[in-house]
Length: 281
Image (cartoon, rainbow, N blue to C red; front, top):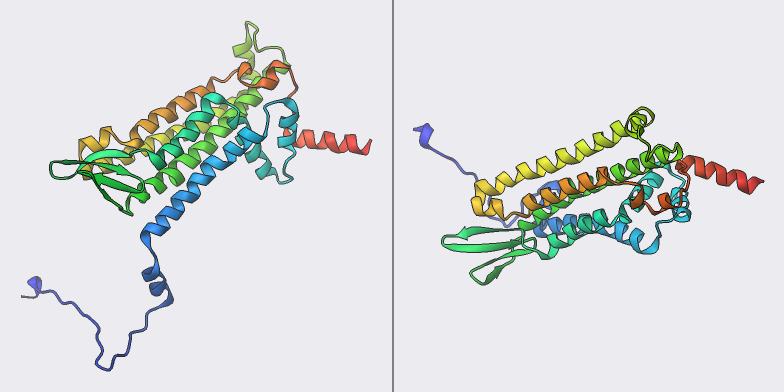
C-alpha cells in the first residue's frame, strides 16, 4: 500500500565522481553552529557593556561634559545615542543593574532542570553540568544570544531614551521655576505634554519587551518542566527590567548633578550652533 510506503533517494557514484552542490549549500555545511551562536552572543555582550563602561569611566556628569557629549558627533542620530547612553551610564540605580545582567549571563547559571531522569542539571550559557559531569552544548548559546540581541540591547536603548526625556522634562520645569511649586503637576502636564507622552511611550515599549521575554520562558516550561521555569534567568531578569523602568520614570533633579548647579538645558543642535557663533565672534 502506497499509504504506508516511504522512499529515500541516496546519490552514489561507481566511478568516484562527486556531486556538485550549490555555493549556499556548501557554505551552510561548513558552518559551525556553536561558533556562530557564540559570535552573536559575544557581539551583543560587548555592545551592551563596553559603551556604558567607557562612558562611566572616562566622562563626568557635569555641565561641561554634557555639552561635550552633545557635540561629540556631527551626525544627529549618533550624537543622540551617545548622549542618551552617557546620561544612563551616570545613574547609579540604573547603571549597575543594566551592566550586571550581561555579566551574569556569562558566568551565572541560566536555570535548573531535570535534564536526565532523577538528575538535576545546571545550565550555563557555555554548557551544562549533570551529576557532576560537564557537557559543552552549543545550543545553550542560542538562549544567551536571543536574550542579548532581542531583549537586552533594545531594552537598554529604550531605557536610555526614557532617562534622556526625563532629563529634558526636569530641566525645562527647572527653567520655569515650577519644579517645587504647588501647581507644578498641572504646569508640567501643559508645558511638557509632548515629552511626557514620548517618555511613557518608550516605557510601554520596554514593558512590552519585558513581557515578550517573560512569555518566552514558557518554552523552557514545556521543554524542561516547572523547575526550569521558576529558576530561569529570563524570569527574574524581567523583574529587574520592570524596576529599572520605574526608577527611570521617577528620576528627579537630584539624580542629575548639573541640576544641582541650576545649569540651563540646551538641545544638542542649539549648543552646537552657539559654539559656532562664539568661534566666529
